[in-house]
Image (cartoon, rainbow, N blue to C red; front, side):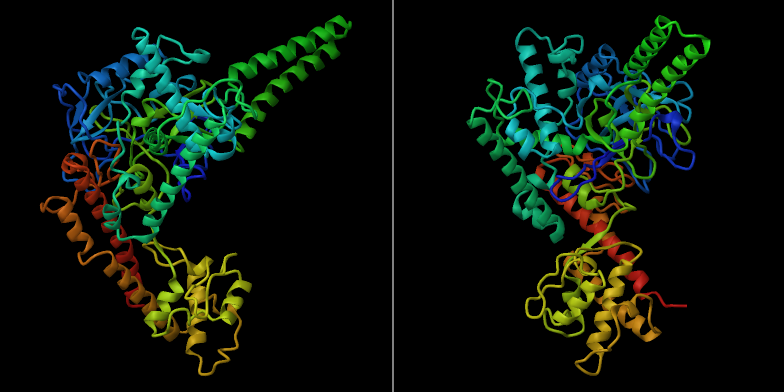
Length: 623
């Protein structure tokens, strides 16, 4: 089953960005193209034989596009944290880490490098497998753990806050075990038999200062992109509300530990705002989500076996003949098949969220990477070599799913260059179009026109101000996602109608229904529509700054041309660009301020590229 980074929605109450492939690698539907973990497309550079003694401060998470050379893998064999992680992985049953893939850096970006020798891994070979019992998981209907206020867990906490609470509990367990005598390794068991996770936790970033959530207001203004600025401010309000709710529930004596109303007699711990922000940032930037399977194949097999024994035993004790005994065996077999099929079908309706050690080291590349896979038959998460295999010393990538750079910047702290899923969100389009043709704010969408658009299903459910209010309504005319290919068909439909009505010789308008404008009109009308939209796009490009995207890339590259990636790797989890980040984190270096500027500059450059491509299509001569 494909696990994908949970897709960001609003402040994050929806699903996150990374997901799990189908049932297991061997059972992918033939008609479905499932990308598997890949290791770039150029010939590999040989890995360094003298790794540094400690991991770099930057933990940027993605890799190059249009790179002049493939970054060389520097294995972190001698880095204490990486070495402890590999040793711990062997103790807890993780296979592949340390022999098939190794923690490494690539021009300052930390990730996973293929270590399969001498010839590398073949396509489809499993490089990494992590038992589900080792991961921190949040299944549906997860009961409130002891120490967390149950009222907060059930009413106030979105998925990422609950998983963040589980992460903080694991940190407390590991710290308590270490204080008792260093019992911090995988061989030691904590509550419920789960391995203690100290070595894994020590590899998590100490801070996430590269993420816009932690920027100053001045740094946030550097984005020059109101939709993301508004989303970050709303995220701040939401996260602080989540922390306040925890404090309030804990003050009532609610200590959790049962999932029901009262606290079960235990007292809840109360993390500081900074601690909870850290945990939620770790979760938002490292979690995979995917179908939830409640029980393993082994447990289902035991249940089916019990059914079979009871069925056959009942037939024998009842003096059944051969035919009856055969029916009993057939019923048992049917029960076994039903149990497995029921689990598979049910898993498509339920989701789980997972912090998976080692797998969360995969850097993002939307073109070359793959999703992590949940293997139902082995009850583990795995990563396989993709097309062309994985040569020794090459980075192994994973895809976090089709997300825009708005999401990547906000929740991961990086920008992917030439991101195929990127879009520019344009607000108040009707108002902007009205300004282009010389109308006062709100004059293009009169009450009558708004009613007509709403009746045609082009304004969504919101409406919005009109007349003198300046609003354009919602739906096809607000929060419009502009891509390299242009504007959505619904937006073009609505604007054809509005521009025709505004150009009508009398106040009565054209007298034509909105549906008449769905298809393209005459050449002059379409040219006017393209001209208005082109003017709107040009104004947006001006708002993004006086430089071109190419000039921004030159500045990012230190004046050397060609463009590097846009990770903001000041000690956090910036994950750079999936295709251009040759040395992004290393170049970022320095103070958080310069890292924030680099990310903002790279973000603006990518938005300029989206708008530039759209403008080219709008102004291209028609055949």
